[in-house]
Image 1 (tube, one colour):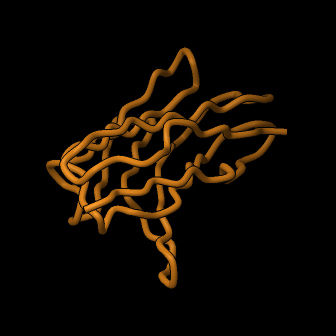
Image 2: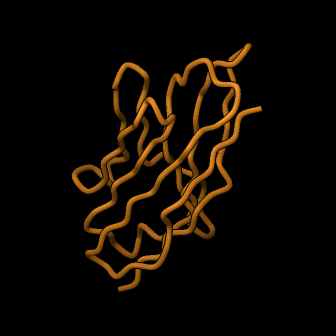
Length: 118
């Protein structure tokens, strides 16, 4: 069984910064990709940033230049550094990972709330 545990959410003023962490644990042979998605009230879940094992990154247009995704391979942990936060970044942020155990699995974290006040 593979689990993702997120941390780092909270309340911040507009223009501030937060760093989210996502630690993967369990019987993991390798991690193919890790990413962050978010879901604001009344909206669909959307991709924020994604990092593959080949170091390829994807960012939502709305966060380019402000958010940075990174990974510490030895710790099976991904990070999302969020700078210059805006009220429209308010959402529940979910970590996602595609991992190889005895098969490929897509795993989701429980979510962490980020609230940006104006």
